[in-house]
Image (cartoon, rainbow, N blue to C red; front, top):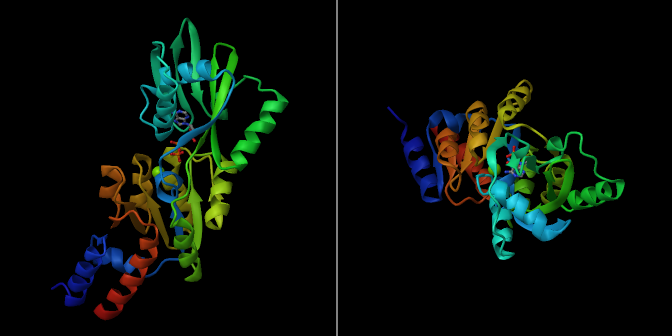
Length: 286
Ligand code: ADP
Ligand code: MG
């Protein structure tokens, strides 16, 4: 029979907006050394905004919007919002395709066009001056995406997504319990490090392709018990691989299904609250 403590405990947790799927999750949550976080939508608000445009803004935006129209990436919606503010009517492109962890590309006017990170730049040359500017923007925690057409770089956009107001407190509470905190993200190293510094995360693993997140969790599991906190479609495999998968209630359906603990209020401080609760409940069951 299910111990009363388990029923009462998980019931109380649920009232606080912390859904614990079963007793196994509780046991695992009580025995962790490492907590790994996704960045976008987990540590950050997940509502990116275009803050800077380098190049002719109308040209950069109309080329970018023609591609991002067809993309579901959070960065795409930031670009579409800015394009509509600038009254852009995006030209039609063909052969659209998304390139995982890099960006989007298509054909326009007989030329290849793309929006994405430096991995998509390939043989394109950006001048030394622009390279310095890019690093400055990234150090301000802004994600830089380049817009290319044929053999020219039309320009670039910097896109900012701020940490949630509670992220810093959430991380420091976990560190105070002796847990190691790690950020696992597909974004650029500088951007990731800058966000990590703002919220006090111990370690950063950046430039991770969506398909590789789970493998990183398995690597960490060789030396410790690991929780993974995430919200996106690409977080689902890491959520199921981790000893404890913790999903944001605001996350995609697949992320919510994959988590053993669901934080209904999307408050990152609830990670620590969930651990405190599991400790209490497990000690009563025993
Ligand atoms: P994350 O969700 O952790 O940022 P992704 O793998 O989704 O990781 O994306 C990694 C990087 O690829 C982004 O930071 C961005 O530079 C680039 N990228 C992906 N999709 C797009 C897109 N639709 N438009 C522009 N850049 C993109
Ligand atoms: Mg995310």
